[in-house]
Length: 98
Length: 311
Image (cartoon, rainbow over all chains, first blue to last red; front, top):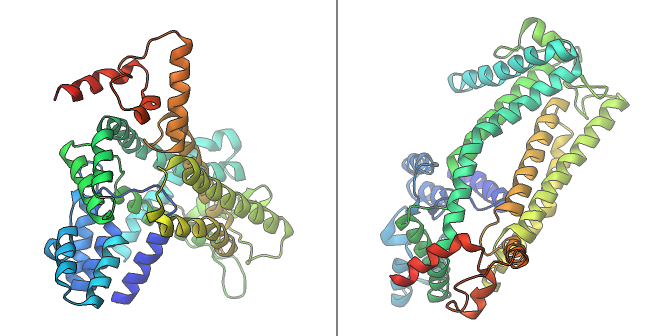
């Protein structure tokens, strides 16, 4: 299931990359959904749906991570400086940039 | 799924039947023009409903010009950390309660409608295994409406026929033309956005730029491949949507371009040129740094700038 969700999100991101940037939040809804579902499964799906509902014309958007202490730029920077594990670091960076 | 999809079928078919009834007295109840217009009517109605959101977005984009100095500062400060840069940018928008970006929900909310239309139109086009037409009624599109829609023609091709589902040359020609039109509008819309509508990207975004270029050519191809399976009616819907998107974007790029994009600079040049021709003095130029100078708009912008300096 997680893999299917991931493929759908990737396909959506490929398509939306050709359109004007839309999402009011950082990271974008699709990116948030990918991380949330990968990390929390069904609960992540619920989190992603809630985020999508919040991404409406009347909200002001902002910075909203799945886990701020894991994904934010500051968290990543401190992780890089301590060099916990190269592997997970790289993965995290990809998630952040996409 | 039925409890979600049935209301959508009702909405889509209801709108189609409504427009059918509106256009029937003019073009005739069984005319292909009436049915084609009712499909286009659905697109136009959805897009008109979405216009207020679109206007709201444009307004926040305009408000953004006042934030340009702060945005530049953020870009410079975090030029090595794109994530931090994006975070700070979002914080800035939130602080000033002006987010230039649209939002995801209205865009994704259109997808089920498209899916419902696809199912409704496919229902009209349904055939038995032996190839005998057996339209399936969905929502309000039933009885005589269904019969009439199943026979309706768009430039000689039944709106229920698809390229692969027929041997008729007329249907093949019409579907090919519609697919070409769809691909062309998608291509030009993307191309226009990429070359004029978006802020110039620095080299750190090379990968994204590359990806966009691939998509630019990939999507028309995907349309061509998938389009041969779709009934003419769906192709009409798709073409109309694309045309609308293109027109809307054309308007935005000409009149309200995103700050920092080539189209924006062009508009600024035109405006300052016009201001000069009209003999208006542009104040405040001497106060701003040199690269900013050509960006100074007409007089309208000035109060904002003066306010900033006082702070």
